[in-house]
Image (tube, rainbow, N blue to C red; front, side):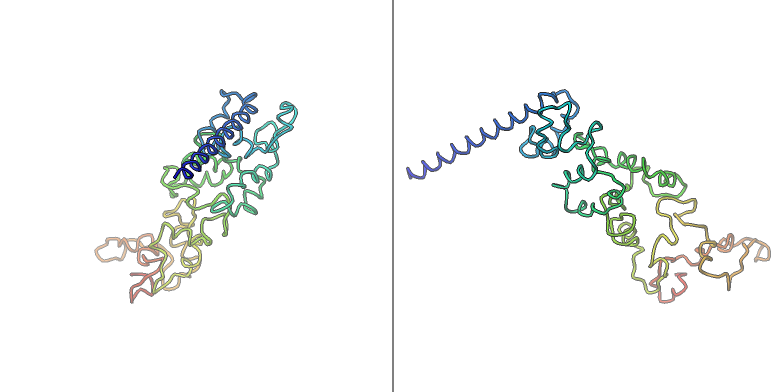
Length: 295
């Protein structure tokens, strides 16, 4: 028993000494950065973030992202840090992103290399601010502002009468797109356009007994995902949209009026001659008699 107590006491002493050494090292390292970057500097907001606890916290967390920066410590006004994210000495985008990817290299970040944003010479800090306690790009509406600062054409589409409710904060760009890269077109979250749409519009997925080929192939053949002047996000109004593929055979090509109808009352299924008045199951039908997508 005495031997076990002695081993336990020695283990406790060793842990205490190790902790004291780590604290002394952190305090010494911290002083190296705080000699210039005093506690009132805005960059110290990082202490309240997950990045502020890297490598044990203190200035060790600075080294984790900025590198050892020995030359910068010796002559801070002349030499930049090994990896600089600031406006004064910005490192190349590849260098800045590589520093982030030492930790962020799996999951949604795994496809950054070769992504659209990477090819446009953007870096992680083009959108993110690791020093802020609340990274603006992580909030829904703030993130949209950052996206739309560059994607101005999409900004205009999001103000059209029919649109996804991004401005209302009900959806976000990242619900459909992965800004760090994707396996499909436009950095979509899913491999195909349809799989992306079906993640919300599951009732349109099928399989159906009677398929509508364009709907099964690509939703964007008929819909504009960001916004349109036509409900619901259609590229054109019916019947003009449908007649891009379907000739007007079997149907008159002019709108119906009330003349010649029983009682002189216009039939709502004929006014405007929208194909969807009758072919309402346009995405597909499971009805045994639904070959024409009318039921």
